[in-house]
Image (cartoon, rainbow, N blue to C red; front, side):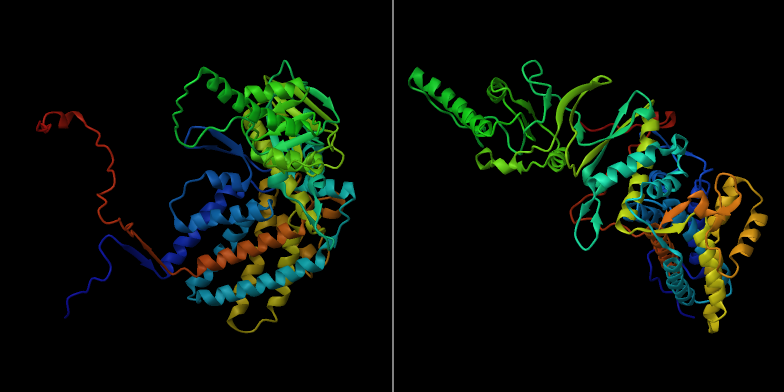
Length: 557
């Protein structure tokens, strides 16, 4: 008998085989269970305490999972899913997790029967291809300019959210904002950049009904010299700068010895002239409003206010970009390079208003703004944060439709149709892959089932009725009305989903399920390699108890 050979260090833990599969599936199911109740219009809210003691109250799948701190590696990759979904299409963050969890759950039975994971994955991928084909078949095109359609769509996205009680308000805001910033990039495509050109300003106070989309931008700044500069300018000529209007300090300290007293005056005069030149170069273009991202000295301020020009300094770069887009100006880096074409004349009104206890500058009534600000008012900070999250989702949905104007039925109808079609197709598949394929078909029913659970109706009865309706792939538009739990036609109820949200959800969920299934070994306890010469990291400070008080070591002097 040979002595056992140690390959792995003692500190390493290694799990392999089915044990890992079960652990991964359990972890993923746990994550799915956390946010299962937040799917659909009757969804519950989750309250999360973050590290700094702040409270987040939300039912946005992504926002919840972002705050969770998980230990299990498989669960962490589930969280990544909802983040991807949020970045790609902005909606369906909850469904993607529920679907992935269900896909793994149905795979568990096959792993018990010693199916090889690659077989299951192959079947899943086949199911995914067929599912996308079904989506293409039942999708209907929509006219982006038909506002009532767009409203129905965005409303069904945020109908599941907290703000659904404010009805059309958020939907209107979202559609206005996204149609404003849409840019045609040719070939009939439109690009909508939500992150860059739509700013959401949350101002506590007032009521939600006061929220609006500005035809232009607003930012939290006042003019430099409030008494001397105009706070309201109609049809302003705007110049945007990216350079300081103050005297440059030298790089390194220099000592200048002055022999004559007059030289001192000359030095000061040179500084003043430098600034005066800068201002004169700007004033040549007769602007009414000068905005710079950097500093603006008192002297420059004096020259500008003498010419009747309002100035705003130290603006955020992102805000500056938005103003440029809104009024048609170009951001200039050096005053000597100014041209007439750089002056923005697209704005109808510049004014500074006091909202609550802060001053906000508005540049509004633009002719053809390509950037806008959504002004949200509301009673409390938590409320505003939640409304902002919902608005983000709503805007993403509007953006998706503008990009790819195809619709699918909501309310679980799509998933049921896909499921029914896949069940039919599964009989044509030969060999061992047939069973996992069929299981994937059944897994799609997780979404309508969860919707039914959250409405509090009899789940089994509802699901059987729905499956009967969908059995041979017809009436694709029959689904669950999430508010009442009744089985209705989604076309009449105007419950729709965007095509690319659904497609992305299916793809992400199935691919993630395949990835987790193919893990068969987890090795944990790998030490970080320390750089040579680095001592052991800072150990935790020892907490002294009464017992150690006696045997204190006395430090040598």
